[in-house]
Image 1: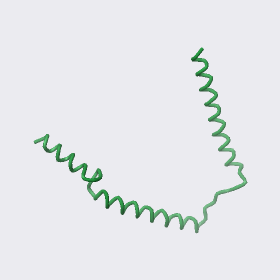
Image 2 (image 1 turned 60 degrees about the horizontal axis):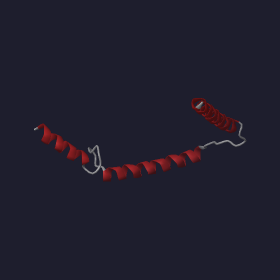
Image 3 (image 1 turned 90 degrees about the horizontal axis):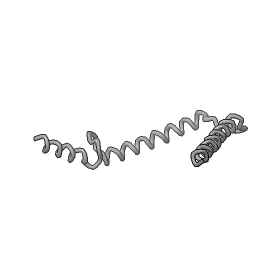
Length: 87
C-alpha cells in the first residue's frame, strides 16, 4: 500500500513538472513581448564582459600566481611532501 501511495505521489509530481515546463515553453513562444538584442546593446554587453573578464583575471593572478595549480602555495607544500616521501 505504501509503495502505491509513493508511486502515485511520484507520478503527480512528474506531471506537475511536465506541465510547468510546457507552460514555460508555450508562454515564451506565444508571448507578445520579444527579446531582441541590437548592435548597441551587443557592443555594451561585450565591453562589460571584457571588463569583468579583465578584473577576474587580474584578481586571479594576484591571489594565484601563474604556475600554481592551487592558491596560496598549497601545491608547493604538496610537492615538497611528495618529494620527502619519494626520497
